[in-house]
Image 1 (cartoon, one colour):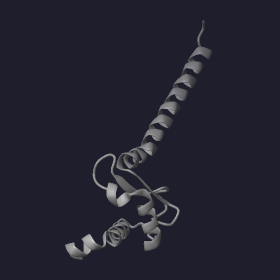
Image 2 (cartoon, one colour):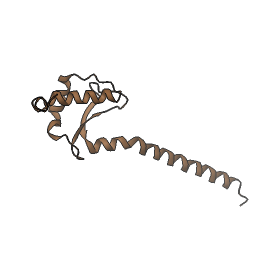
Image 3 (spheres, helix red, strand yellow):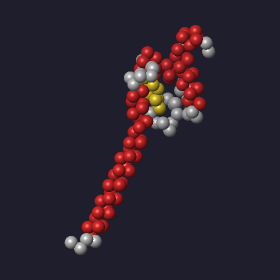
Image 4 (cartoon, one colour):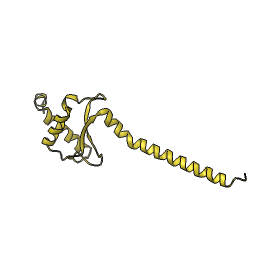
Length: 116
C-alpha cells in the first residue's frame, strides 16, 4: 500500500492495520469493514487517534474475546492504560486483605493462649 492510497482510503487502511495487528497477537478478528466504519465514524476515532492520553484507541471490552462485534469500544489511551492495571490492583487488594485476615487470626490465637 502506498502513501497516496492510504491518504485516499484511511478507513480501509486502519481497518486492515487493526486486523493485521490482531492476527499478529493471535486474537480473533471477525469485525466487518461496515461494522468498523460505523464504530469509528460514530466516535470520531479517525480525527482523534494518536499517541496522547486523550487520543482514542479501539479496545476489546473483554480481553479474552477477540475483535468481534459487540466486544469493541472506542476509548482514550488513558482509559485503556488504566483498564490494563485494574486486574493488578485487584490482586494487590486481595493479597493485602488476605494478609490482614491472617494477621487477625494469628492475633486471636495468641490472645486465646494468653495467660492474662
